[in-house]
Image (cartoon, rainbow, N blue to C red):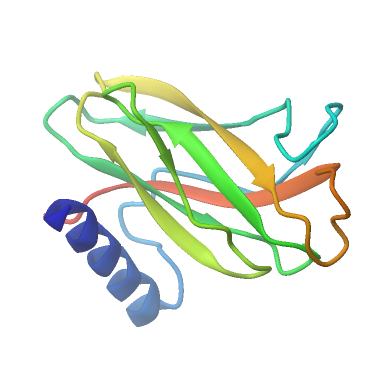
Length: 142
């Protein structure tokens, strides 16, 4: 819990100080758009986000931002390096969150799958039809 809070604070300080994360940036997708074919609030499609890892001793996090063009809240999720599902709270348009990914990434290219859950609010009347994300994977500042 403390580590997750530290990761969030360190990343937010980096974002605040620089306006955006530029140092130690690993992978970025601006923005990814996903069209769902399922009914209900859980989208049946995910967004791949690839990054290069330096090895298992380095911890990573992913910074997620809901596009300002969203018209309803969305919750994002992925599975961390321990196989645990990690997720954000529901993010309103333009809001950000950070998910801790862990340190079990071997050296080389990796791909996260980010999923989304909608919330019946705003333009969402009970079915998440599409969603977007801006994602940046970075090592935890040491």
